[in-house]
Amino acid sequence: PFVYSTGTSNSDLVASPGLSVLRSYPNPFSSQLSFELESAKAGDAGNLELFNLKGQKVLSVSLGSLNQGMNSLELRTSELPNGVYFYKLSGSTQTGKILKIK
Image (cartoon, rainbow, N blue to C red; front, side):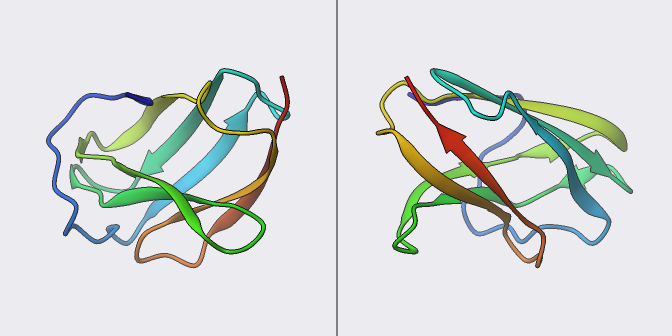
């Protein structure tokens, strides 16, 4: 219900090396949040996860099969409460902070 993305879905995938979030926008966000991802190679990419300030996972999105180079992901976030969130790529140490406001 939150996600618009292309590719296959598999929650057991681990992020491939060379996958990074270039930016998330807008920040702060309201009902929609977009990510620009860069992948060093084509293939299954793992998950993007959102956590609240308590460290609880509130959303996990399968990235499916990405193309080499630039990719985009759009999340429908109207059901998330206002607050501060952190995103993380599964299998990666890259994180970022985003703010949800109405």
